[in-house]
Amino acid sequence: MIKSGIFFIGLLILIFFAVIIILEIIFRIIDKILDTFYPDNPEDQFSKKYLPYVNYYTSWDDAMFDYDQIVGFRLFNKESSHYHSFAKINKLGFRTHEFDTKKNDEYVILFNGGSCAFGSGATSNENTIAYNLERKLNQISKKKIKVYNLAQLNNFQTQELTALIFFFNKIKPDLVISLNGWNELTANNIMSNKTIKEYEIFNIPEIEGWRPAGVNKTKKINFLSSAYIFFEENLNFLKYLSFLKPKNYIKRDRERKEYRNFYQSINDGSELYLKNLKIFSQLAKGFGFKYHSFLQPYITEKNKLSPDEKKFFNFRQEKDPLSENQNILSLLSDTKNIYKNIELKFDNLSNINLVNIHNLFADVEEEIFYSMVHVNDKGQEMISDIILENIKKDINYE
Image 1 (cartoon, helix red, strand yellow):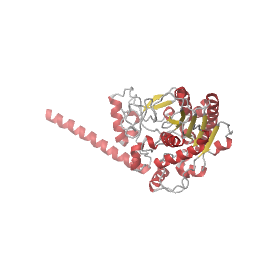
Image 2: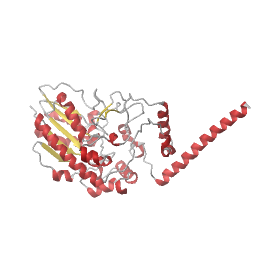
Image 3: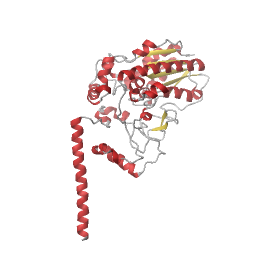
Image 4: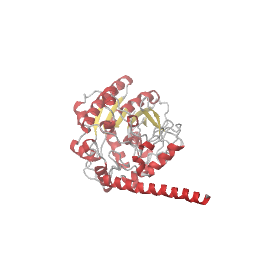
């Protein structure tokens, strides 16, 4: 009797696992046929040599960010291991120096933006745009120049303004630089009209329904959630069984939702970008700093692609649907300069220098990009050079 019971239980377990294996095979075939699977693994789209610099999280319990969703602000979790092998994060969660009291003989620059400005793709802090700027400026200046990099992944202008206001008293910058534009004009397509039109803010994507790349370590995730997360990441068929998800399940990566019209996103983003420039202008007047804003480069404006750039380019053509079933690369190719509305409607504010560098790499033959806007060490240095050329007339070197 006992032996038959054990045999029966064993048979049920075997049948259970056999059913899972069969379901997994079926759904993997469905994914392949429908071509709907958007890979979570960066290796599927990025060259392997860039993987150490784009692998944003290593485990669910090792949170990448600390969040303050009330003000839409996000900082790197200084206790996290993310990036720490090559990116040095200060006590507050920025990839920059520790914040020191400004000295009388110092000229301080606040550098801000999203992931490109943060230095995604740079092999070390010393190879980021901000550090390149600081090094080159100190080579030509008698006065010590310090550049603080307050950029964060997925930052928008709204978060730049927040960071400037939060940390102005501590840093007391003489000059503020933004490197942005891409997120504000293209990534706002997942934001609601209410956010853009009524609130007139750019939210960080997590608040708009995307999955956080990490959660604060103080948030408890029970065994059921942890088990579901593990199996969902490894079994395709679980993606189709959403009713099984625990109530407190927190999703990990981007949740695809309906996109806003691409061209409307460009227009709305441009209008809000210009309104925010006026806020920067007023802050610059009130606090006495100079302000430069640079509209960042992107891959479709590069005429000659390297083999790895072509690999990424082709991947995005095949795997990245957008609104109206159009691909972002074809839309960008049709649009060319996505910043043209900003340039046309810019009021030439006397204390703001706006520079469009979207085609900075147009004639560069060597490899620069590993994604739509993220660049390698060579790209980081070239961006720092064009920024240096534009800001050096405003700097007090004596």
